[in-house]
Length: 168
Image (cartoon, rainbow, N blue to C red; front, side, top):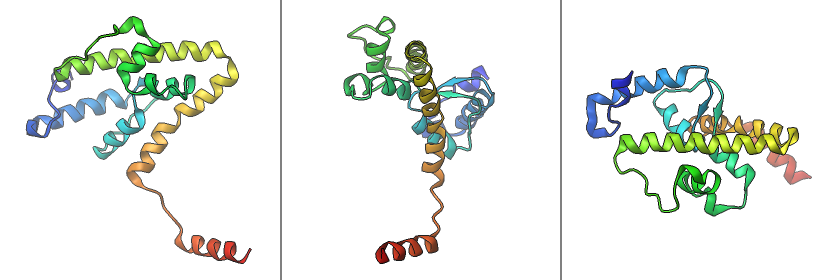
């Protein structure tokens, strides 16, 4: 797995792509909790490759949004979220790593750090907020499946409803 996980994922990598996707299938296929920043987008990209992560998915972006819904500056990207929610992980002038492997590792650590902070804050807010938070965490996989697979629409039912609305 280690060697496959380090394979490139750019189109120029050609045959080296498949081992990387297989490594992702293996890692994401277990039932352990996973932290996925911007999970809806990531899950949609994975679904196109036939990869469907199992287990609870935690998205620090969703959690941070619940804690600060109007705070666009802190929610702009993962590094801004880390500066806003877990500043001990990243300095104020920190520049993300430039090479792909280092950037990936750094982003994974930042996502985990922000998620741990969010989870701690959610617990401190009490059980009512905790239940809402748990429900929100279930949405990214559903929204990603809808994005990739679309929605089935019953056209005849919609026509009948349109007629009913016009008559009302």
